[in-house]
Amino acid sequence: MTPEHIKTMKDQIIELLPEINLIADENLRRNTAQVWEDAIRDGGWTIGQILRMPFSVHVANCEITFIEHVRTVCKMCIAVADVLKDAYGDRTDLNYDTLIAGAILADVGKLIEYEEKDGKITKAGRGQHLRHPFTGVAMSHARGIPPEVQHVIATHSKEGEMMVRSNESVIFHHADFIDFDLVSKNRPF
Picture 1: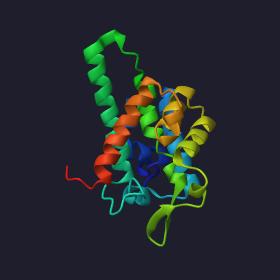
Picture 2 (picture 1 turned 90 degrees about the vertical axis):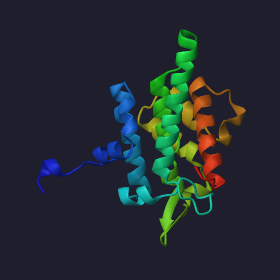
Picture 3 (picture 1 turned 45 degrees about the vertical axis):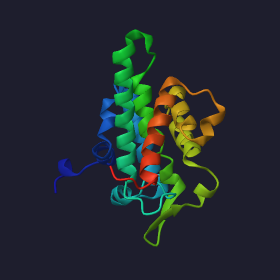
Picture 4 (picture 1 turned 90 degrees about the horizontal axis):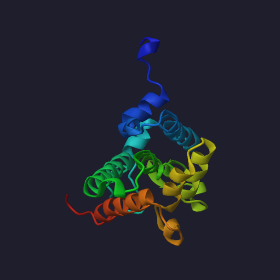
């Protein structure tokens, strides 16, 4: 195979998460992909493992993968934002880049929180001490992800209950829990 046919980690991440390309700001788009690369390397994952990873270790017999969940929730966020913009026009204060980057990065910390041991995905040692919103914010901060996006990551789960969520965080929080609630109940779609 010639060097031009070898895919970089960034290329593989974009294949996994093509929604990254919907981020208009070039720096934010590049840094979002870089946070994913950092998490994959730090967590010791391969792309193959990530493709098999269930979206939650708290759901028995989970058939929805981590990547399916991230992509689905991101698409749901965009759809909600589109409906709100269509309905309310300029009265809607939403930043699509913040929403999309936040949706793509909200669960990236699971690559630190989880590990594969004896063929099973479980909470890692680090996951016993820090949940994914915390590690996701830390990794995003290290790569210069703006505070507005870090806010979506930090407040998307139960950790955000004590905060006033931004518009983008409200959208992500509800889209995330729609997907979680339906999948965790193993409901047919």
